[in-house]
Image (cartoon, rainbow, N blue to C red; front, side):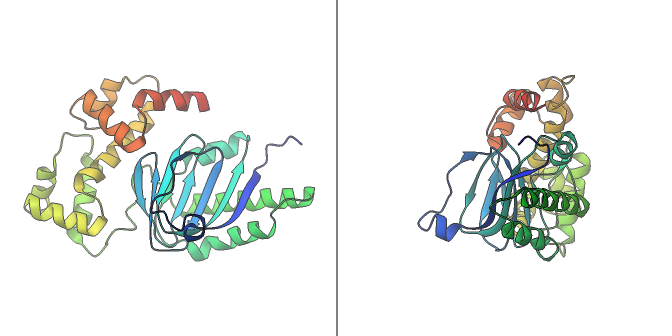
Length: 266
C-alpha cells in the first residue's frame, strides 16, 4: 500500500547493556530512516555526523537518513523509527535539530509508550493510529524549542561567566575571535577560562565555537550561491582549508560531499 503517512518500521526500548554488554562504543552506521529517541538515563554520548552530544534523561535525538551515528555506552532510551514521503512532514523534520537538550521525558514518553502498544502493525487501523501518533509526537517536539545552534539547556546555568561567554560566541562566531578574546571579554585568564568552560560544559571553548560555525556553515551549504571560500570567511574560519578540515572532523564528510548529499535529498 502506497501512502505519504509516516510508516513506523521499529518502535520500543533500547538498552545498550543488553545489546552491547561488552562494548564501550556502538559501531558507526548510516541512518536509513528517521529515528527519534527519548533518553531515560544520564550516561553515554551520542555522536551525530561526528558531533558529540552528552546523553541526559529527557534529551531528544532526531536522526535523519544519511546521517552517520554511533554512541558511547551505556544508555537506555525509547525509540521510534519511521519513513515518510510527505513534503510537509519532510519539511518539518528537516527543520528540527539533530539533538535537543532539556528534560522532556514526562512530556513525551507517552507518545513512545503508545507507539510500543501499536507495534507490530497488523491492521490498517493500527497503521493509521501509529501514523497519527508519530504526527502528534512531531508536533509536540516542534513546539518544545528549535535552534540552529547548539542548545545550552544542559549546561550549568548558575555560572554567569559561562553564560556570558556563550552569548559572546553566539553573537561573534562569524568573526575571527580566539579563546583569548573570549576570556578577555569575561575578565578571565585564558587558562582559567578554558578549564572553567570545560568543567561546566564537557567541551572546550574552541569546540563550542566551532559547533556554532559548523551549524551556520551547514545552512549556507544548502544555498548554491555561496562558495566554500565565502562560507569559510562568513562563518569565522581563518581559511577555507581550516574550514574544510574542521567540517570533516565534526561531520565525518567534507563540505562538498555534504552539499552534494543535501542536493540529492532535495
